[in-house]
Image 1 (cartoon, rainbow, N blue to C red):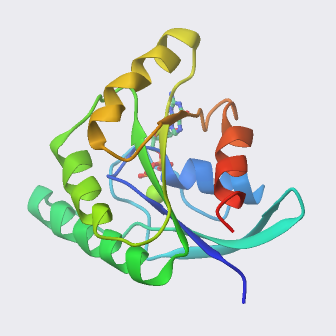
Image 2 (cartoon, protein in one colour):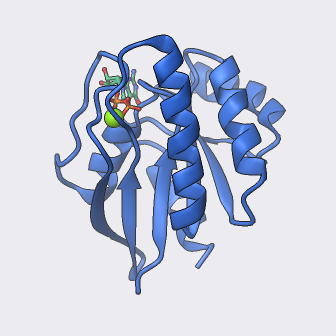
Length: 162
Ligand code: GDP
Ligand code: MG
């Protein structure tokens, strides 16, 4: 069976945007409102001749405390079912408490974790990603789901794990 790659992160960091870019189609719903991705969305993807299943984690969430619980649950499901986990954050929001909560859950995973920082739309923002070393998940990879920049580096890192 194909390796499973899960995108994990707090609402609004751009998981669905990156998911759609990687699978080259608009399957996931991108929303300005945090937490709008419904359920989990799976699609086949490939890079450099390697195939995998990409998962957009999300969940319907309305209240702040519900969001936190949902995110923990999503991260734990990702740990169980994925072969590679991509934690996504957002350079415009800097490192938040929720980022730290997710990172702590992911430390427990005996699986490869890749840290990607989205919304690095310009060179100044690509420099701001160094804050994210504090999450303890290794080198942050700057990406822009809007512009498509950095996705080649992210995909190289993903397929290097299987
Ligand atoms: P999700 O909740 O993590 O799935 O995030 P979405 O993919 O729904 O995106 C949330 C918001 O961020 C939307 O308004 C997107 O258009 C915006 N967004 C996504 N990627 C980028 C990016 O690379 N740069 C900027 N500036 N905005 C982005
Ligand atoms: Mg989403």
